[in-house]
Amino acid sequence: MASTAERKERQEGDISSVFSSLSGEAAVELPARFGELKRHIIGDESNQRALIDSWSRLTKRLGQAAEEIDRKKQDCIPQIAFDKLTSPSSSSSSIKAIKATGAFVLKDVIDRRVAEGWLTEVEEYIKANPEVKGFPKDDKQVFELYWSKVQLEARSHPRALEVQKSLLNLFNPSGSGEDGDVSTKVPLSYADRLRIRHPGDAKFALGPHADGGSVERWEDPTYRKVYERVLRGRWEEYDPWQIVDRVRAEQNMYDGPGSCGVFRAFQGWTSLSSTAPDEGTLRVYPLLRELAAYTMLRPLFREVSPRSTLTHSEYLASSNWELDFESTAFPGSPLARCQEYNDITHPHLELERTMVSMPKVEPGDQAWWHCDMIHSVESVHKGTGPSAVLYIPAVPLTTQNIRYIKDQRTNFLSGRPGPDFPGGVGESQFKGRGMDGDITNKEGRQAMGLEPFELLPGLSEGEQTLRRTANEILGF
Ligand SMILES: [Fe+2]
Image (cartoon, rainbow, N blue to C red):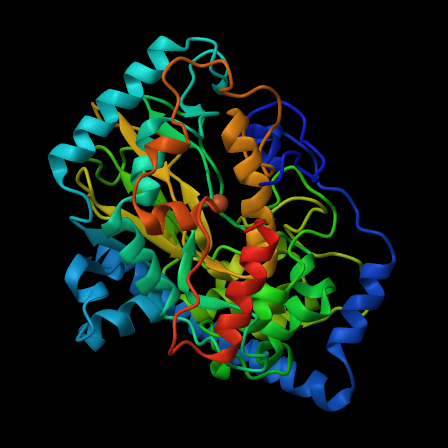
């Protein structure tokens, strides 16, 4: 096994370094090359015509969608039973709903009493180690904890791994890439934080954002290829479930503090509490294709007349928008941060009424959202109990991801945070942290890079090669 992590360690800190809105940064003008990039994407006259038509169809659709979402609220979010997702005969209507929405609640993944026990146990771990870092500093709720025994158990729980495999399986692994770029059969364990939000809290209010970088979506040619249909004026044909270009894309060109060293197909959390809308839960914009199309087209257009001179509907009308050949503006896309959204930068989304809170979850339920998803956290927790979640994503096997897992393993063994997270000694001196021996099942150990992947007969040649490469990277 490797003994030293090759990545540069990040500065000590907490989650506020990740979001420009949490850290209070002002918007910064992008360099001139972003104007050139924009003109390059807008392309020739025929592409320009296609983009203008496409923008008109999309903004009309977003107007209808806003009405629909505002009316249906939580009913926009599918609530799926564990078996409906994981059994081979999984109902196609559930899968269709997940694919159109891009976010959903999965019920009863972990036994309720087990999940409640996890919350008690993790609270004891925090009590035993009062020096733990967190946000906000004076009333910690998002903890710099990665290696509690509870987190190790939740990440390697057989039902959790089964869910992650089923989610990866929703993606199309072929597409334009080579067989062997990605395995949707093998989930990896990405060690993220946990949050225990207190009733009344209004500080951990993450505004609407999308993970996976900001300007990288346009600037990196492979990342841009994911959205090629959109950028050719055919957003209705864009398939959010093609995975190959996504896994090869560069999501972190500026080494941002919030960047993610792995490709996460889905972000998710496992709830340890009973949490309803208005109790500090997650919000999403529940139309996956539409939100990605708008994200990608938005910087190519600019307003003709400012908002102050028009009615709301006149301002949003496609006739009030034109292609932008001049500016370097990529609204809500600061370098080295995640993509952020608000009513000024992305007015057609009408976020005030379209960001929908997750339906009520119980201990042991999970919430999941696709890697393109616009998501936020409710600004105020008006409930009476803790709103507690363990962040556990679905991460497929790729060579880039396994390199991260190798470095993460080094940090795990010494109790330091994974390479993506604020550095320092972390939990290395903490009482009762989880160790290698606490992960006992084979799949859970493989997901952490603690055991080699099997080269089973019947796997495709690409899958075999990828597993062999992964084993070599891990030193097996
Ligand atoms: Fe996020």
